Length: 259
Image (cartoon, rainbow, N blue to C red; front, side):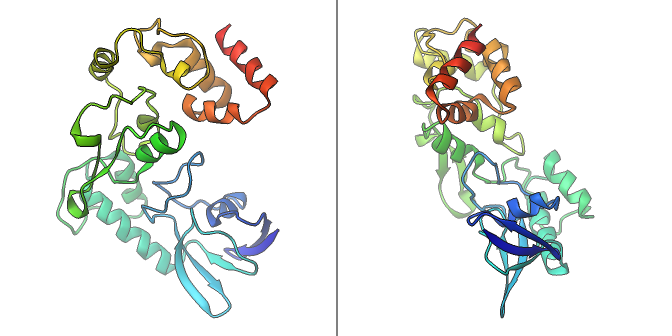
């Protein structure tokens, strides 16, 4: 166990706990955009930056990925921290001026208009969609392409992916709604894979059905809604979570959602 102080509040947590999780236990809110509890910490947006003090050391770190250390003192809203966050949000607002999530953050920080040239984009390159496709779905249908100013999320060779299972996890984790599941895309997905393609829950190992009875319109699926209601998360995260449980609990849950 590790004891540290966050905003002058002492807390003891397990070794390996991140500063973000330790702060949450104390009810201290730290803004994030690239963080999801079901994915490995990434530290891309840096919005969760905090200031740490340990002995003679004083520096800024990303709370979502930095582990606690014995005797560490953490400040989550110092002038230095708030100035850094404001700069990050200002950059994001100039990149995505019409994205509600970013505009709400800017309003909370008192930012009315960015000083930088507007790009009118909707993706902040947080990597959540890429990571969920790789880490949870295990598919890798999308990824980062190009470098520098040209960096973006795309499919290999800018072509429709033949490995995408249409799970919609990328859309569910996107903080800016840059990725949307569209009926036209589902139709193209069907044409690409054929009518005998297994539905996403069969591909995830949740059910044994081979052909979807909803024409692959997952939002109409009763199983989809039952999983969301039961576990409060996207089914693909649920699948990973369920498979870690005991075998009898796993099959009991499968029976329940198919009733």
